[in-house]
Amino acid sequence: MSEILRVNVGLGERAYDVLVGSGALAAAGAELGERFPRGRAILVTDRHVANLHLERVSDQLAGLGLRVDPIIVEPGETSKSWAGLESVVDALLDRNVERSEAIIALGGGVIGDLTGFAAAVTKRGVDFIQIPTTLLAQVDSSVGGKTGINTRHGKNFAGAFHQPRLVIADRDLLATLPDRERRAGYAEIVKAALIGDAPLFDRLEAAGKDVLDGAALDAAVAAAIAFKARIVAEDEREGGVRALLNLGHTFGHAFEADAPKDMIRHGEAVAVGTALAFAYSAHRGDCPAVDANRVSAHLRAVGLPASPAELAHTDWDAASLVDRMRDDKKNRDGRITLILARAIGDAWIDPAADEADLLAFMETQLS
Image (cartoon, rainbow, N blue to C red; front, side, top):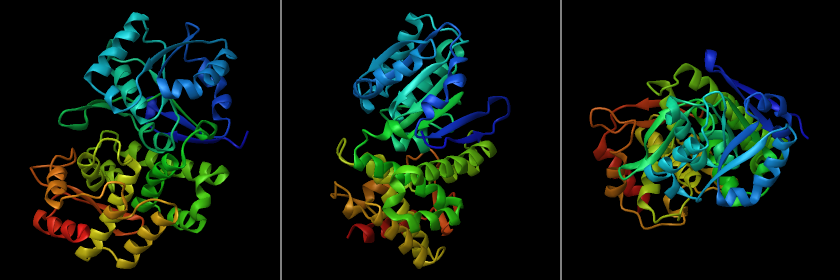
């Protein structure tokens, strides 16, 4: 077991800790045990994660005297739907879940978002615990309390802010993660540095690919979570500064929405979106071109795409992508909101992007 790093998300009475490192699940024993007064742990996961991790997690919880009662859904975004939500809520009610007991979300972002939303609405709110099994979920969706499902209008258009009571980011659970998924998760780590922690970016840049493993990865995960925790504590419901955490996402979500299903990963789209946000900032004269070039170079150094041509899908249309950006949840008064940069570690919110200029920029990037 490595040193367990602990990050606090400071939200007063709803504050909670994130435990990071190899062996974090075992280290959380006492804190986990007190969350299940009935001696059972209702756990939501998907079939794929269950095959990989359910037995091991169940054994560790059994060592605390807890009986695991699993709810297993199908893997993938299709479960993150109204039908998926209804299925999980009904399963919780079938088990007569009480508001005094917590639900465990074991899986990636889909499971965390779905379980968190189900916990938020079941009996007007029950506690839940995040045990993320992907790097992306560890540094992004498991922390901050944004839960939700997808609708025909887009990703995460229905949901609730519902904070977990504990997050366990155990590196051991990443051992089965394919390299592509690990790299995709890293996009959310470097994003945090680019928003507001230039020294962290310097360290990540110096480490290169080595940052994706071992204690270096633990330190990077903890640093990214600590940065996000500060933003969430200041603006829990995304009324202001928390929108900065969407650096790269307005561009990235457009690529995700226009790509064939499962062709590109969220983290890959965010990586390209982040590179484009810096490139567009440089195009406008807001950010030094050298900073935009450093961002693209680092993304490529760790094996991430940094331009639309480097994504697995390459048949893009600039007008369609900009049209997707018009549907972004951050937008106000019918204007596209972009997260841009003045420099590495200095992101800002532009609430009214010039759409004609943005379209011309995207056409150039795709040509």
